[in-house]
Length: 251
Image 1 (tube, rainbow, N blue to C red):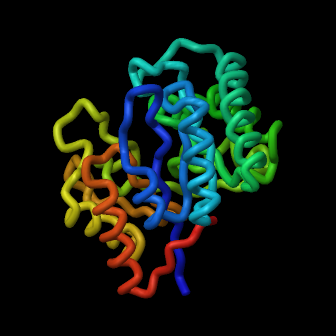
Image 2 (cartoon, helix red, strand yellow; image 1 turned 30 degrees about the vertical axis):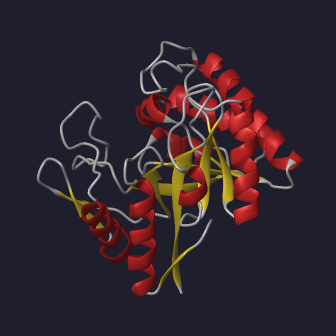
């Protein structure tokens, strides 16, 4: 049976601020990218999210970002590669320890927001992210865009790379994501997102923001947990893929 991983960025609440329905969305995904406290999340939320993932059998991933709670990690920061290494080491190390303390195991790493996007073209940042991850566990799977510096760094370091596609984000023809500040860059319509995922997984192609057609063969498909219809979309994607004989399974 053909399979694909369905991941979601979750664990993004902190303090009195609450976002997403992590418990419900975990019923429909195979992997969770858990915020590590720097762009979102806090120690209590991280531990609670890890416990839920262990109970529901969802693969646990670290989702490190820039130290930017106010900007939700979606703003680039002028940090050196060595600083990024240390920030990623701290965040992934914390998530790994919490996962193990709860009887789970860290399976993958996916950078968040601006850090993810910056590492697409910045070789030094990509090496910092991969270097820190490898120092903690060389068996970790790295999620990222194809033909990116993060993919190159992963392979240079002998680690496993998972090609990621985004269910609810618009693409340019060159395979990069359309900036969130642009209209229709984030897709919330349940049917449209589900149609896109079907196209990605079954025919390996999607229409792009700039009028083209992008060929993509995802190992994992991401749905953002803060999307207003995240749970409904995840449920519909499950239904659609299952009807086509596709198993949703962690890597």
